[in-house]
Length: 246
Picture 1 (tube, one colour):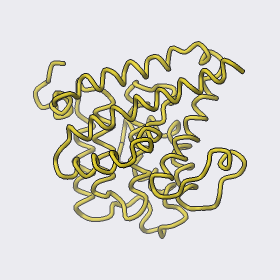
Picture 2 (picture 1 turned 90 degrees about the vertical axis):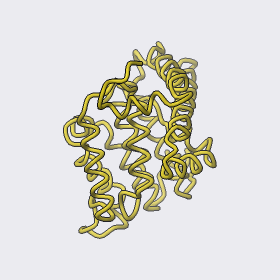
Picture 3 (picture 1 turned 90 degrees about the horizontal axis):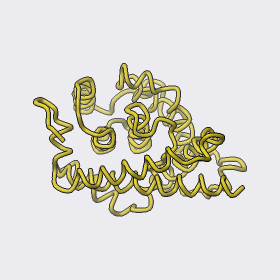
Picture 4 (picture 1 turned 30 degrees about the vertical axis):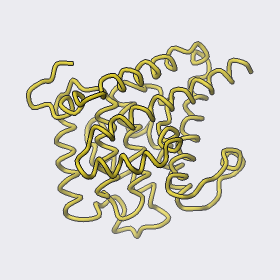
């Protein structure tokens, strides 16, 4: 990868081991996108990805609900409901994210925290520091980069979650925003991947890597996020194969 001047995402992508991990995740994502079952069932796989991603995101917040229960009628728990609403917003927020990521983040927080936070807190950063960091993040996202969508998604995820950006629900918002980046920047155009599944599979590593990111060790975090996307691709392939077998 050629690092363009003034391209901080590319500089992060050049950290040790990151290029290989990103390439592995990219290949896994491409295998999913090329699966023949998607000619008929892409919306089905995307819907399953949204459900499985929401379930995993809620589990990472401590509310672990079996998939069968979610399918039959999700519980009224605000974490679960917020995660489901957030993944449901991904398709409608792609254009907003490209144009105004801060607005998209505010919308995600509004749907995630609707059952918990007061009206004045919905969509608003948790502090002045969080507001400044989110504004700076928006500036970075507006600039050109040669880095993979995965690297950009990981930085967005890390910033929103580690600040935390919002008084409640930042983890769910961060994970959903990462999905938005992958979709909007072309790595997962049809929203088939649920990286939340990979984060949940490596739950302890997820927490450790996020703390590392907050402390300035971005490389550890990027490696974890690449592994999570690779795991998400394996899960999506399993869904595609189940559909193929009928």
